[in-house]
Length: 216
Image (cartoon, rainbow, N blue to C red; front, top):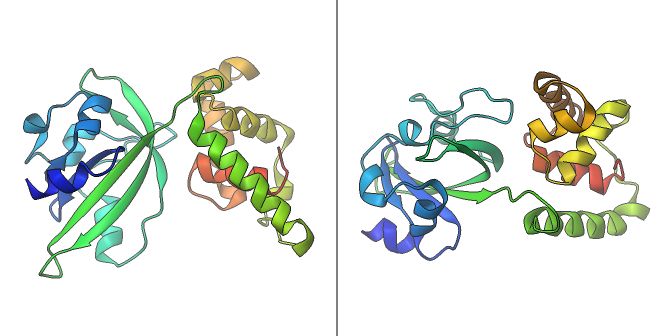
């Protein structure tokens, strides 16, 4: 119950898992986003409930969790995009942020996961709009400071720039494929190349870097 109280202090969809990956907390916002009632998921391994995939469609959530391994190695876990499965079987894309709450023992801890859904469409993508505004302000501050762009930024192709622009507008992979007349597989390849060249780990970070460096 203690986890539920703490999770309800945020308006974001949030759940908590223990060091074994079992769900120990699930707030009302998570119920609304994913359709699972708290009582239905408590005690279950989170990878079985969420079935997360990365932005390329590859299975991300598994018993041998990458996040747990990073925590074990005391590595920082940065926010990233992931597609999580709703009770209906549909997937929703969200930015996943992780906070680790230490326990009394080194191997006893609670992991709080915050899910910020990517709201696509017209002017309704408030998250991306805030990111664009912040990135432009940062770019203005750094413009005279000669801040260096990532080494691969100048190597982006014209097609990759087009993909970046559509990502910045909140378009999903199928929408980008349709807009550019290419396959979903090709869009994922371009996205993977963009992340590698810009030295980032998520599409949100890629768009932020591109805006700061005036690539789009």
